Image 1 (cartoon, rainbow, N blue to C red):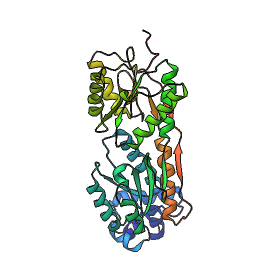
Image 2 (image 1 turned 90 degrees about the horizontal axis):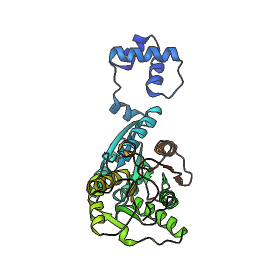
Image 3 (image 1 turned 180 degrees about the vertical axis):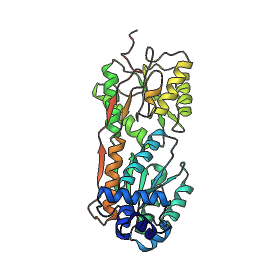
Image 4 (image 1 turned 90 degrees about the vertical axis):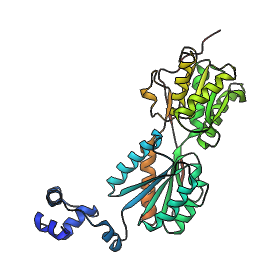
Length: 335
């Protein structure tokens, strides 16, 4: 089936069918319905490869990120696909798993894939090599999203991680907690910035962070949060609250504390970041929510502007975050 077959079946012009399929010109609702019905009845599928040869835009974007197993990033993938679809774009998703070799693969592959623009999660593996300069050298527009790192040459949209840590610290201090442990990977910029905000809140109250309560883990998931909490307990240092650098780490910490006989929140309060799995644990975990949809829409709109030729100065935008108080925190127990 060709576009002419669709036009004949719907009783409209080829130009009308093209406008409906490409979403590049206004079409009245009745005509749009006739065309969409004809497309469905004839099982018409555009030849995307052929269209890419004759159109200035392939209307395809890529989203490169470390992993989709982390619910924070999987939420962002769904938001990116939904927002891109509204503009008539498809999305190719590539994950690195923290492997620079995979990042290099996408660096070399994407310029040959007729992709108009790329959203890149600003993680260490995406920025450690020449991915972004190489893509831009091939004329591919790039915008950074999520993560805590940034590059001065491209637009970057992320949450305010320092303020997120500061909000957690001030909240726990208001509950009477002074001995606050922090669990996070050493190679994570997000963990470093969130811990920085937590430390700033302690210093505001005249308290100094204790390095003995800083537990570095090797990973970003629930298992690492569980093992890190076990190691922290083995140090035999007192703490009344534990902050995981993301919700998965906090969930692992929650399980480890319960297994070791430390009731949450009666003995120890637990906090996470991300507002992903935190609402489904028992008890539900207090966390910091990031405006993922707003971040995605802002980043995608800027990427589309870059694709259309905008040469405005790159923008670095940190979005405000929100503390969501749930059942895993309470006032510190008095001796």
